[in-house]
Image 1 (cartoon, rainbow, N blue to C red):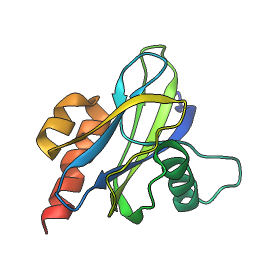
Image 2 (cartoon, helix red, strand yellow):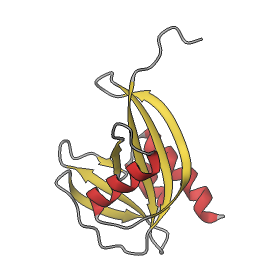
Image 3 (tube, one colour):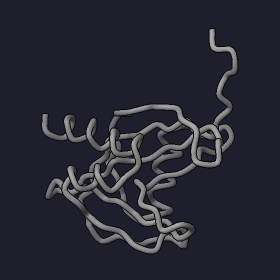
Image 4 (cartoon, rainbow, N blue to C red):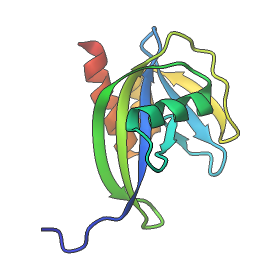
Length: 134
């Protein structure tokens, strides 16, 4: 048993593939870091509905959401607990309509997207790439 359980915010994100095979990454307004689209799960919200809601709010994209491809827990730079679940997704459109939470977006080949993102999100792209290539 773990002596000190992790208390964490739940974050749901999508690894979104365009028909070309590129992956969408978005740049945060707050610190200009790059991330996958998604966000926090609301109280009593279904996980898949929550991640679809967040993706639509942040990008305006309709997504064909698949199953989770990565889940992990960590502590961020401020020592706050995080638990992330990452879903595989496909979109047919590449026209993104960003919310106020992001200032920029890019469609990148999976390897470049993986390099642009933090450890947990980069691993999610790597896992999703394996699913996408099947």
